[in-house]
Amino acid sequence: AIGAIGPGVYFNPNIHLGGLQIKYGVISIKHFLHDLQTWKWLYLAGRLHKPTLSLLPLSSELSNAMSYNTRAALAAAILTIHPDQTSDGRFTPIQLYTQISQLSYKGDLRFILGAE
Image (cartoon, rainbow, N blue to C red; front, side, top):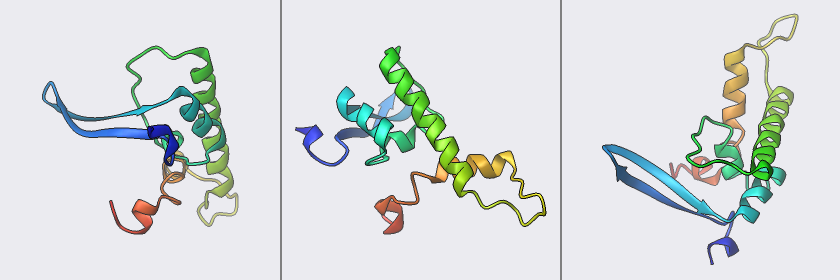
């Protein structure tokens, strides 16, 4: 079973659809909610820190979990950002967005080991 290994998601990469190349993942709602709410794997939760497109309507439970994940990413980014060496300690929106998008990469073995 897919859910028994790692984050419990199966990806189909390199799918050609209408002249586009797409990738989609399949995961149980249980595993998806767990990743969004706990960041145990930060796998799909981390992917959702970046812009995504939902093709289907979301249940209120999923929508709430995704909002929680977004707020948690914002809080984590603010707490870990390195502002420019200015007296007021401010950071730019670009620095904030960059920090948010890097959250999931910092612990990803694929990037640490150079697999991607």
